[in-house]
Amino acid sequence: MTEELTPQQEALFLKYLEKWRKVALSTEPINREKAESAIKKAYTLIDEPEPQVFIFDSPYAAVISLDKLEDEIGCSELYDDDMIDRLWEKLIESLTPTPSLKDKNDYQLWLQTCDIHETIRKDLNERYHQPDEPFYWIPSKFEEGTFQPDSVCSEMARLDFCISELKCDDDSEIWQNFQAIVNNCWWIASYQELCVVCDRPSILTFDEQNKLHGEDKPAIQFVDGYSVYACHGERISKFE
Image (cartoon, rainbow, N blue to C red; front, side, top):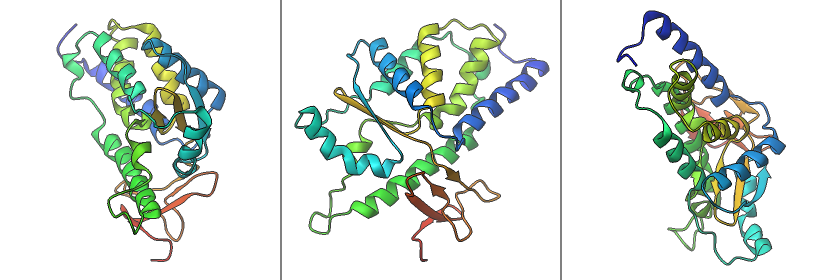
C-alpha cells in the first residue's frame, strides 16, 4: 500500500465521508429489529452471552427506566463493561495499519456529534439533579457503559474506504456487525445483563457554524417529545 492517496482516491474518499456524515446526522427512526439483532451478535463476537435488549424512544426514557429494569432482571447493580467499545477496539486491532489515512477523519463531524451528546447529558443532569444529594445525578449509571455510534462515523468513513477501496485486511464478521450497529443504533448503554438502545432524534437543527440551534423550537427532539433547546451551541431552557 502506498503512503499517500492518489488524486482519484482523494476524491473517492470524500464520497465515503459524505456517506457516513449522513448516517451520523440522520433523523430517520432506527430499525429496532435490526438493532436488537446487531447488539446480540456483538456480544457473541466478544464471547459474552446475549443480553436482554431494551430499546427506548429517547435517552430521557431510558434514564427514567433504569431502576425498573434492574428490578426486572433480578440484579442489584448494573455492571458497566462497555461491551460495544470492546468490539470497536477488536475491529481496529484487526485492520492493517493505514498511514495514508491516519489524518483523514472528519474532525468537524466528530465535534458536532460530541456536542449533541454533551448537550443531552447536561440537560439530563439538570433534570435529575437531587437538591439533597448535590453530587449525585441519576444519569451517571447510564453514562458509564455508553457508546455513541454517530460519534465514530468519521472513523467509519476511513475504515470503509480502507476496506472497500484499499482492500485492507479486516475481520469481515466484526466489520459487518459494526456497520449494522452504527446504521441501526443511536445511544447505546451496554452492560453484562442488558443493553439499552435509544432511537435517533427526530429533529436536529444547526446554525451556519454547525452548532446546535433552534429558532423558537427545539434544537434536538425525540419522538416521545423529549426536547433540548439550544441557541448557537449553548443549551438553554425552553423559556430563556
